[in-house]
View 1 (cartoon, rainbow, N blue to C red):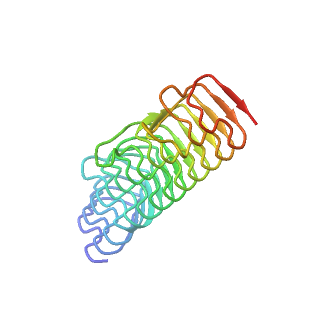
View 2: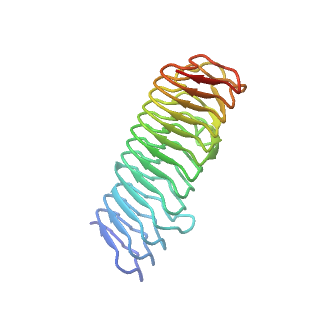
View 3: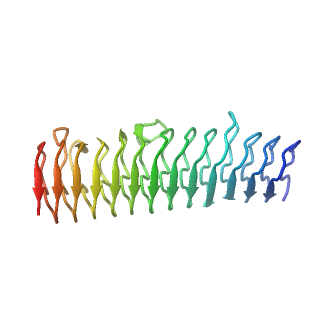
Length: 239
């Protein structure tokens, strides 16, 4: 392609296909770049795979890193400047990440607004879409969370070590840590301060649907719509 690997000096075992692909590559090895402007600024990073227009486009512009995989029609890991062992599959997946490592995002817009939090897994269309962004390029705090499902954990800004599995589970909460939420629309309908609480286990179809608040802690809720509006602490709801 036009100006593909134009500045490559001593890299080995690379594959670059597409206009401006790896245009500024210098000494990196074992990279695959396919698509317009893929890996265009990678100078010395190795073992990266970028497939799709502008995937990993600015990677390596600040420093080095490697072993990243970005596959998407547009802009997967587009802003990543440094980091290792990230996987982004899907259009706009991890689009705004600048300095992250060990993130796995699969699905269109999955983890797309996160700036700097690492050690997260987001699988599903819009999973963690606005997470850790504060609505801008200002990073939230936390990370190390798992979200699986359509729109799951899509707006979390402050919190760590959460597991949310199920379509739209915990989709509106902005804060909470060390929670396990399993099922369809668990903690989906919360209002007010949007705090889902900490150290809760909620399992079941729409369980804890409107349960929220900073006092909502250390609850165990299991069952169809169990604990639907609970805002207390240290409760057990079964059935």
